[in-house]
Image 1 (cartoon, rainbow, N blue to C red):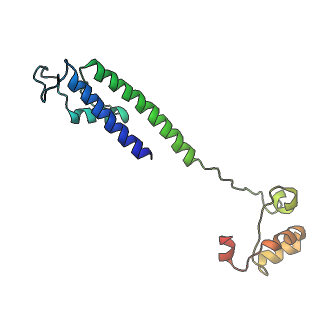
Image 2 (cartoon, rainbow, N blue to C red; image 1 turned 90 degrees about the vertical axis):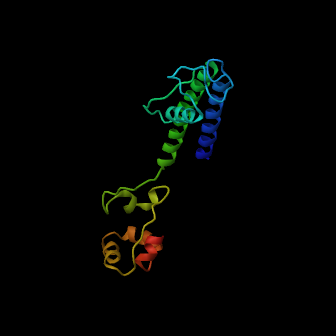
Length: 163
């Protein structure tokens, strides 16, 4: 949707600026070629696209400005739109890129979220493979933890990763 808005805005701005320059007495004065203009005033539809893209991307390139007051005003309107458009796009992009994911950092097996899982809301779900060395060690030294995690044990590593 951002690409469509940008594409339509570029087309509308380029044609509007060129149209007002074409109508302007100091510009093309409604002629196919600008016979009255000086040698240094080279303005065309392609140069209008170049101007619009340079303003949108804030490029430090040489641009040919229009001579008509209305087309200059429309160029300034486009420049303001480009600043606002890029600011909104950047803000939305940052909001999408910064997803809120919680990663639990444990201090070890004696972490309170593991030792007393019922004391935290929401409770942290964890388990291991039954009858493994980890399972028997936790059962031997941390019985309360083992009794809680038994309900979340999985029969294989693949099942544990999927869960």
